Image (tube, rainbow, N blue to C red; front, side, top):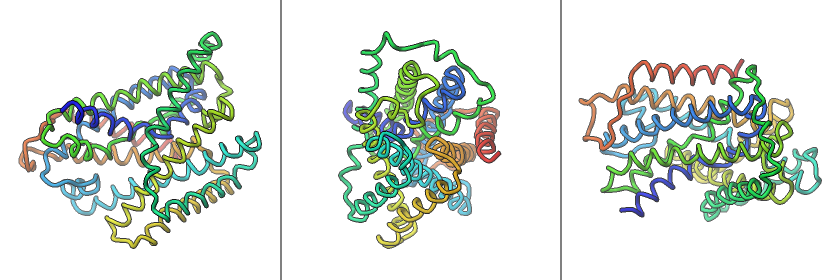
Length: 370
């Protein structure tokens, strides 16, 4: 039972902590640490409650679905496509962000500058297209390990260079950038898609699911706060948009490994979505999951629409916001008479709090557009 419980925690934490956390120090440096800390804590609590609501929805339903399936079941069939689009936006935004991030990192690693990032991004895309077309799935298992290595190395650097940490860097604040960290941090806390997997892991022990979700949702907060303190303490306003570049070539290489595995896992997830939900052939699913990110990347690059953190922010605010709103609405419609079974998780969230969360999500979406 204990092994299943810890596997459930690791499933959620491993899904939440992806390469997106590399963008947190940059946006927090712009707004100020206290503003960033406020958003990290608030979004962690919001996503914890949404994860618990998702757990209740899953445990109230006899059949297993992904979020679009639950939306169709409880909100009506027309909502399924809307929620699917919200999910797809997040996946594409992440893939494009990692194309940008890998391009910048490879260019810095080889040339000591990010000036050649367009060409290195294209080279990375060619490599990943070949790997994903061949269907090599073993790399997917490396992602959690890569994230752990980056964090541990950063923590060790923080301890070794403790006397060099300038905590006055954490005193800076710029209220005009109040909403700037929202999208990136929200992206970094998204893990609701793994809740169905936790139910599978805890089969016949569903009563442990609530505790696993709570612990699994809070671990990323501790990691993100420590990571941000160390990076800002060492580099302050000079931190790179991709945090690992600030530490030099060796740590940049670790950051590249993290983005490589994250890109690979998300590309396969997108392929599976097209294949299993829309019955696409393998080749057609590969085209949609590989060619479209390249097109979006080139549009963003040639029109100079944004960098690594900006694209993550789009994905977090728009996709995360829409998915969060969807789960809030599904939970509100999940009345006792509609439940197919008695759930092991039953969480009461006042309607006024749900409305407040929805308004925060909408504000984040509007901020990205305005």
